[in-house]
Length: 128
Image (cartoon, rainbow, N blue to C red; front, side, top):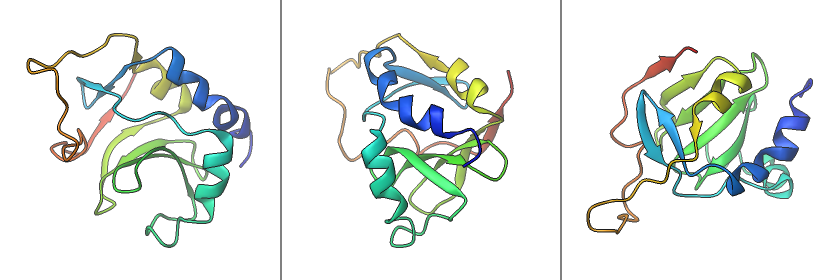
């Protein structure tokens, strides 16, 4: 895991700071928490069951939609349930630069639990 361990051990702390992320150039709510180090470790054992490559370490999501660290090249990728790459950040630094403290308030105040921002996204790479 090279030097990615520090990031993965601290990723849960992002929950207290960030409420949204620029996902394919649109600000999207972070509807789930970033995983704890223990959740990440447990998730490593579930990758095959959920058809996630061995080079990817999930750290956010519900196993249908995921954000993962690619340990081969340091990229961070957002995957949908079909495991298509919907968004890609070149590095941890690029990913962190897309996080936002801005809370998104929906008109009706309700987020439909069946909808995830990954579902409508098209593949696009953000470069900062």
